Image (cartoon, rainbow, N blue to C red):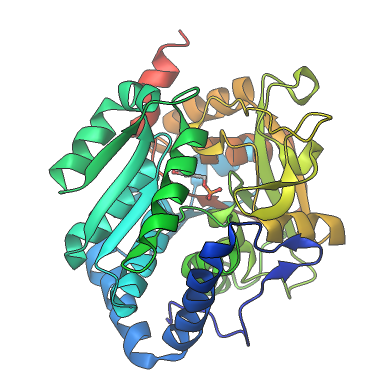
Amino acid sequence: MTAVGTRPGVERRFGPYGGRYVPETLIPALDELEREWLTAREDPAFGSELDALLRDYAGRPTPLYLARRFSEAAGRPVYLKREDLLLTGAHKINNALGQALLAKRMGKRRVIAETGAGQHGVATATACALLGLECVVYMGTEDMRRQRPNVERMRLLGTEVAGVDAGARTLKEAVSAAIRDWVASVEETHYVIGSAVGPAPFPAIVRDLNRPIGDEARAQVLEAAGRLPDRVIACVGGGSNAIGTFAAFLADDEVELVGVEAGGDGVASGRHGAPLTTGARGILHGSMSAVLQDVDGQIVEAHSVSAGLDYPGSGPEHAHLRDTGRVRYEAVDDADAVAAFRRFSKLEGIIPALEPAHALAWVLANPAGELDLVTLSGRGDKDLSEVLALD
Ligand SMILES: *Cc1c(COP(=O)(O)O)cnc(C)c1O
């Protein structure tokens, strides 16, 4: 297994999407990051150090598991890629470890990140503890109140959680604070973006770092089933677990790729997190992509029962894959995702995160083909109180 991609160059655009819609002061840092990533991913020493950490520390390769009872309910075999078994309980550690290692390689001693529900903050804090990097995570004070255990986890790991007391006190304000910090500290600081979003080269880096999900799964399903799946399904928030999965199957024309977004209260209600299913083209967090916005171009808040899908944008590569027709994007509502969360837990003895529960619900609702592969991006312990509160 090799952890990093092998494409020539680092894409700045995906069709019309992507780019760098950022203050000019950040362009040299983005250029440096692009250069460093190009050399790092071709450097066998970097690759083997990352591979060793992913294997011995985080738990790669993750298993591919044939979910027998869920398959019966779905009416065909469903294989799960078990990212829920990784350290910190989700795929986010793939990206956090890779970017922290890259920061170290670039000679940056300080790492910043922003977090909404706290999952990316915990993954980044974990990687920084491992590598001995100073870490500051920006978080809205309302999110800090709602996600107390993750705040405590980050502090235990030696990270400074910087509360942001502006606006709605949630993710949007935390992103702005992190960008302000980066503009002022870019010489010694690396900004770990947590999904396949942001200005180039972040979407390409985050995809490459999650590519082991798809590469492993493709080899594992060939080994286990003797064939490729008919469909590969993953949930899409910013889109990192999905693009890491899809990347390995893009050239397999016979494999249908499905990205499942947050339908929230229903796409027709306007309260959802499904920019790829419904959204116009716009600019958010430094790149052009599908975003939720009003007629004036102002960003509209997203709504989802799952914190990880509660984001008004999506990765630029996904917007392009939608336009080219290679990937199909559909939304699953909160109620169906929660029902799948409960049903899957009883059928398999695995509590899925609410995010991939959207993908599981889509599989139950869309019987077709003979073999499905679903990326189980994380475990659902973090979501218990959210689900129980619905009772
Ligand atoms: C954060 C998160 C997501 C959404 O992020 P992507 O970048 O779209 O993958 C999905 N699943 C889990 C378990 C998460 O923690």
